[in-house]
Length: 237
Ligand code: MN
Picture 1 (cartoon, protein in one colour):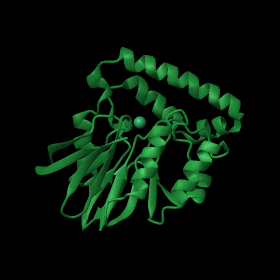
Picture 2 (cartoon, protein in one colour):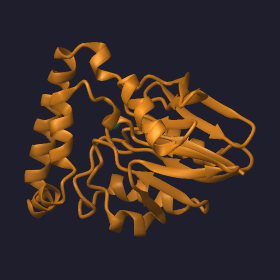
Picture 3 (cartoon, helix red, strand yellow):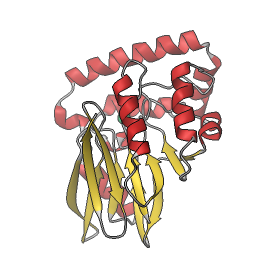
């Protein structure tokens, strides 16, 4: 029972190399993988399931052809992924956070943005964008309007990242420990921060781990996990 985790591919029609890397990974999955988990920011931007483009159709087809059980979680860039996308790809939408069972051990899955609590401006924005009325309002706008809003949000986000200290953009360790304690887990897997690593920590007096998935750029990243191994792997794209 081996599971594969990826996040932060930021698939984008302007980055065909990343799409090719993703297709290559799916075609050469490590032996024994039984499930695929995508923990958010699969797409650079997702304007809604009604945004039909040749690029989106290609990705949907690629995912649909994978016969493994597939799970996808929203990231901060593709939080408008909806049921139609899931129906078309065969993915199941996972709430953030979610707990899965691996060999009898509960494992917590998150995108990771909700752990960056020191970034107060972002946390306010996140709370707004994740509310159902705001999302329904966004989806009621034309695709052109949504594209403009997304593009403005991206410009603002880049400026915010430039102006905000590095450590504020990372997760808050106390929040990690709080959430892991509350959820009763010894392993947390998330993405978002683009700081791939395996961190040892102590939760409720027990040794625990936080595994951060990597973002895809010149390299792709995946985590292969089963009862006996936790392998965070990068490969050239
Ligand atoms: Mn993210």
